[in-house]
Length: 301
Image (cartoon, rainbow, N blue to C red; front, side, top):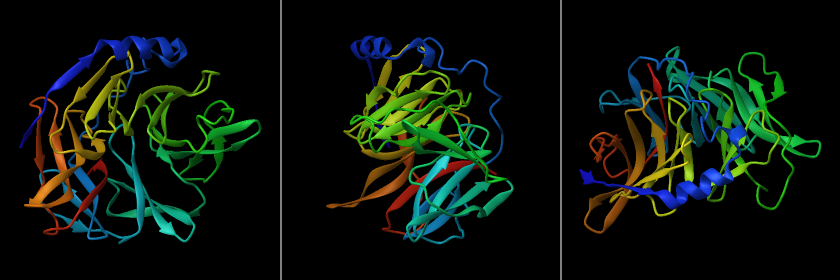
């Protein structure tokens, strides 16, 4: 176990609240009228030894899934019920969905899709990605059933600050998106005719299931929580540095890829659970001894 402590930064709160326009919900965040949190058994979707596996959140019943390798990344729906992953298909991606109806093997929904970063919408009915548009770039939604596309929000003028930006998630309300360029984390409003707003430095940003928090990994490998209502940020200092994070579907914990001392002088990346109520980190039993792991997301089965 690793002990952690929280540090509040009131200075960061003042700077951020001044920077985020009211249309983005600095006083609300769109998180007050969310659907009830779903129920089910949490399942981890992860890569070990270059193979895709599912594992119950308690560490039992690891299962090899299909497709078997070359997964780019995963996107977890805000309600925690579904994960979509992109699998290498030459210069394109095949997109597979994992949920109660498609577990453990997943179902291919999109074949050879020419997109980079993508994110599942809050109701997991579509994926969203940045696409070229007249006068800039725009988040486009692609329906998982029909394949039809439509714009999600306003056209964003391209500038040096956002060139190469990629979407990382939608809020449960569907009114906000979070995006990343390098270590710059941006909020984008669906109806606000404003450019993306820089809220923090870090990576792996994730909306909480209630839509009130954006959690992210800091450049130093700690976990921070940006409050969309107050603009305040709390940072959890990790002794085992973190790379990627995913929220538990009920919001009670965060799962992470973290550095693990396999034996003296040898560190690998393993999946661990961060308990937000006790401030502890516990690594899961490895699927393969000595193998690094990568967490793609969590869904309910």
